[in-house]
Amino acid sequence: MPESTLIAKLLRDEAARSAEGLLRTRRAVASAQGARVIVGDREVVAFASNDYLGLANHPAVVAAARDAAGRWGVGAGASHLVCGHTAAHDALEAELAAFFRPHENVRALTFSSGYLANLAILTALAGRGDAVFADRLNHACLNDGALLSRARLVRYAHADAAALGARLRATDAAQRLIATDAVFSMDGDLAPLPDLLALADEFDAWLVIDDAHGFGVLGDGRGTLAHFDLRSERIVAMGTLGKAAGVAGAFVVAHPAVIETLLQTSRPYVYTTAAPALLAEATRAALALIRDGGARRAHLAQLIAHWRLRAGSLPWKLLPSSTAIQPIVIGGNAAAQSIAAALWQRGFWVPAIRPPTVPAGTARLRVSLSAAHTLADIDALADALTELAFDGANDFRR
Image 1 (tube, helix red, strand yellow):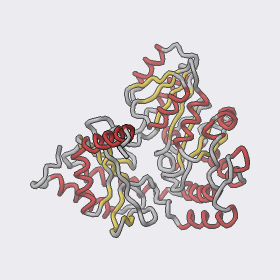
Image 2 (cartoon, rainbow, N blue to C red; image 1 turned 90 degrees about the horizontal axis):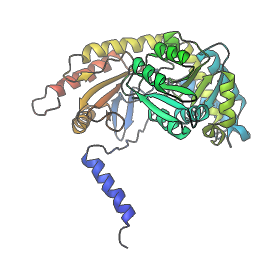
Image 3 (tube, rainbow, N blue to C red; image 1 turned 135 degrees about the horizontal axis):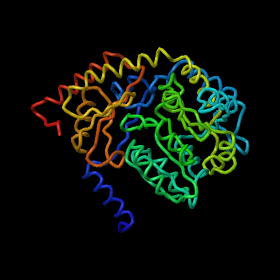
Image 4 (cartoon, rainbow, N blue to C red; image 1 turned 30 degrees about the vertical axis):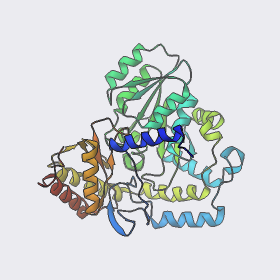
């Protein structure tokens, strides 16, 4: 049978991605998450995970999931609004609202993923005739939510509050919504949230904050809003539970009127099967560890400071990040892949991040630090990168 023209086009597109150094592949991990993981028949030191506090395989979290599976089973059975909502979900939402708390009168709502949560927020709070103002480096799910809302998507220069203010002043939109990552996932820097909240107040706009990479780590674990000591009823905050919390899913914390609107109208909530109750119970155990996780956060801060001291002498650009996300910009796709492959051969898993995840010409190594790492792990990675940077047999510096 001759090859379909439809299939032929897909194969041509795949070949083009490969030629540009943009083909993505998966590695099958054969162990639990941690500072060291098994892939195939070898152990590598992993600097790829978002498990910032090392909780994904914590005994208390594993035990909570195991016990909950015995009580609740392993499936929710239906969406939250049919029969998938349990007392475990209720308890988790109450604890998240009390802990995260962007203002006094709040509720929380859990979702199966951060992607779904952001789609829900944007499509429920914005629509035709409105405008969503988005940082140019926002995560894809915030942009996708804005597009699905049918509001006008207005991008502003990264972390540039003055540029945002100019766009807010120029709009004739019926309602305004500012959307931003709190910690930018590929750069590791923080959004200027105090300035953004001041603009939201001035222009009577919602401020939607994706705190996927700040929750659990910054602000004594309560996230980037607590880091900046910000409180407002116009804040709608999303946090994920598969990063620092080490489990899976996401949550939104906001004014009860916002949460009820999401519960009643947001399609990603109404039409999605609930996450299993065992994940809710595991997350409650993780949340207890986050509340009491000062020592883990202090150790992570020590690792970050030590890494920046060691990596600052490398010939590539170390982005100015004070968070667990420590990117090194290489530039070209092939060069970033080559360095990542060379590190892999030396026993280090550091992913090469390429377009469209990052802008063209800024392919990078995304070094992700965890409280599960040691200072010796940091030194070993820095030594390997130094060796590669000044390897006369290869030109890794471009």
